[in-house]
Amino acid sequence: MSRVTVNSTPIIGLSIVGQLTLLSDLFDEVYVPEAVYQEIVHHHAPRHYGKEELKRLVNEGVFRLYHVKNRGLVESLYGKFHAGELEVIIGAKELGAQAVVMDEHADRPLSKQILFNIFPKEVSHFETK
Image (cartoon, rainbow, N blue to C red; front, side):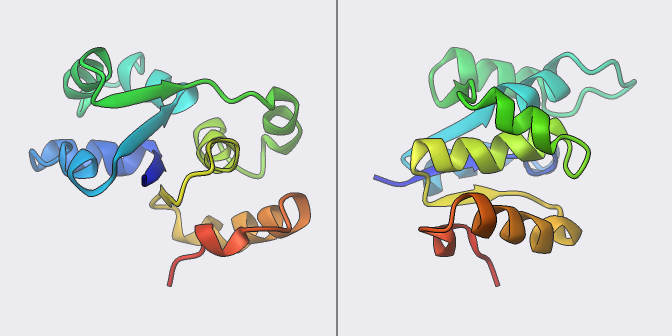
């Protein structure tokens, strides 16, 4: 069974091109951390890309809303990452996800450092080339 956690920008981008369900075609379980969901659904931007589609997919059970258990870790690392990015990485570890979908290329070195220091095992599951 393949699991993935997803950050906001990939959800928004896939929604714009009408391909958000591609994630559920590629993975058995798609998890959206609470902070990511809040950012997309309750953000007060003039454009609401992905908002209705994400709400529908969560309500239908195609995507699953995930509440990160280790809130202390999220709070202690906040500032190096945004809340959504932290919840994607920490949630992936908690869920035993095989992948994360993030767009933050600049944050990869920091995420690897965090994973190596905090989660020294299984870091290769999160590495991308």
